[in-house]
Length: 311
Image (tube, rainbow, N blue to C red):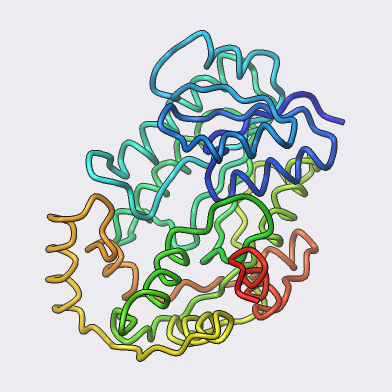
């Protein structure tokens, strides 16, 4: 078994699932947790017997240095499609990756695994995908051994208290709003990947040394529209609400107002940009290169029934 693994963003959606899987597989896991993390998310990590270090990548501290000292692998998960007011994607994705790379170089980390997003590109219109690509480039040119995973929309919940931000917003809208708004009617295509399949991919690239210095695009078993995904989610929740299409100009206006008045807006202008494009793998590396067959979307959605006490 490999030596200690540092996981940043450990209290997040992917982080909590990954830490649970690593602990179950017998790894020595060090969780890097930011100072504003929720106590119940920290307690969940501790319940797994993972070690918790409260520190921020951008602030040098004894706690931060202790987390990386003697570690062999680092998993970089910090990021957000909807950062709160006062936080930027440039800082979350680019600046913090720069600090992560520096720490890994100083501590001679043998391999760095980073989760970004399908659609990351230097030509991306959205700030989310363009800053994710900049983060990738920092790692690719660092001289460190690396693996980059680019998943499509992640869904489902097996452990912990968190869901992906987009799915959490959709569930909130379905449960509390009279109608569910969809930018451009939800016509954009996605390839949703079940969280369990993403975790299997992470375990594979962590354990195997023949997969390094590669970028893998990961998707689920089906290509569907965002509208179809929301309809399937409503079916899972046993709630039926009307879907209302928002033309791009209307969505931009609504997003501008929400950004001005909400700490975390329900819709942002960057999400409007993202919705203009499909989010589908050219070739699904999950099965082709990693040998993992994605589970059916309905099986993944059914995990919400237990976790959200819907049955």
